[in-house]
Length: 96
Image 1 (tube, one colour):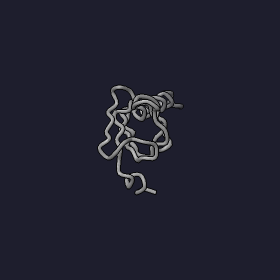
Image 2 (tube, rainbow, N blue to C red):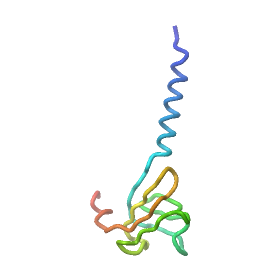
Image 3 (cartoon, helix red, strand yellow):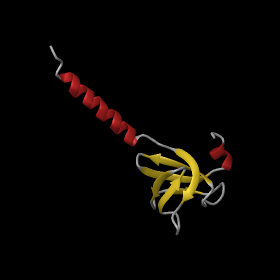
Image 4 (tube, rainbow, N blue to C red):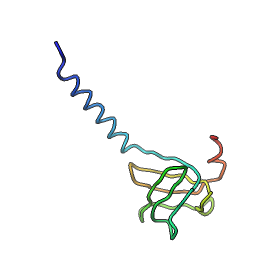
């Protein structure tokens, strides 16, 4: 006898795992490759990943300006960029 609930259960578990992955924190760090031309709001590429900041995004320049070529960390909450922070260059070269 086949188990008709097995495919449905597998689908439900897969959907749950996917949805949890979408809302999970996905913090990372990398080199600033591009950034908005004027100010801090807009599209950035940091460590090869495109992110978009808004007026709600916290910008932290305690370790220096967030210029192209600088190490930065990105704090994500789901798809939202919570913070972009300058970091010492060692943080971006330590894992290489």
